[in-house]
Image 1 (cartoon, rainbow, N blue to C red):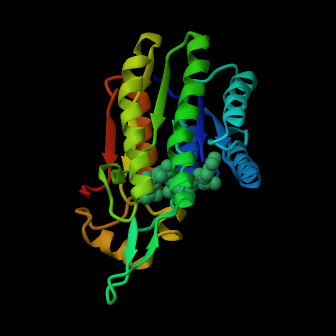
Image 2: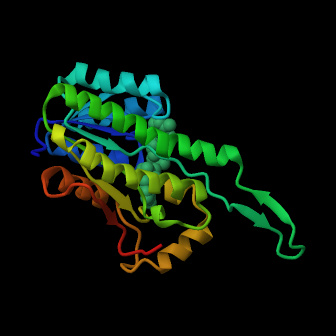
Length: 256
Ligand SMILES: NC(=O)c1ccc[n+]([C@@H]2O[C@H](COP(=O)([O-])OP(=O)(O)OC[C@H]3O[C@@H](n4cnc5c(N)ncnc54)[C@H](O)[C@@H]3O)[C@@H](O)[C@H]2O)c1
């Protein structure tokens, strides 16, 4: 699909990878829909893109709220007349061990709480389900080809300390593959991206420094990824019709 003049909606795009992808697609002539739970940051991102010559429209929404997601996709079409690409990117981390044990006493001293589990499932799994469903519904009614790009993670293979996150991302990878089949008759192509460790706020602020150093040491390319490299991967998916029903690992070779 040609990117120029298309409408590309990205959830979680007021920061991090989502914002980089929005900036990249705007540079290539797309109208980008900036959506995020942080309404002020949405406004800021929209004005940055518009003042640097791009075309951006902001529609704040919480991806785990069904009504807000329905409204997001309907409003995107109402404002631009189209929805060509949806990138399902919003995500959070709430890391912790399943069961934390005191090494000296052997006693259990903590557990991953149900709140920790549920909050990540709500945003990273239910959020992708809702945004994927509503994007597909709009694309089908338009009777035009579309592309859906769910953002997974290499943690989908099962990363210790991330029971909640890994389970959600494995679900995202499964939905990507099955949607490619379910939606093919409507000319909607679905392909995902599983980033490795990319230098965004999620990694730099939320991850413990000792965990970060450990991962850096075992990334075959010897460095974290850059947001721009994830944009390049998304651009490749949009432009290349052969890419369908797969989750591309953009990770510098890290194996979990
Ligand atoms: N950065 C990495 O190394 C990395 C690696 C693998 C996967 N990912 C995935 O890439 C995606 C983007 O991550 P990032 O690193 O840019 O994170 P980030 O924290 O920098 O950005 C995430 C964005 O999502 C928004 N958001 C959070 N909850 C939301 C909700 N309920 N509704 C709407 N928006 C919400 C946040 O406000 C934020 O702007 C996530 O799905 C993440 O799991 C990131």
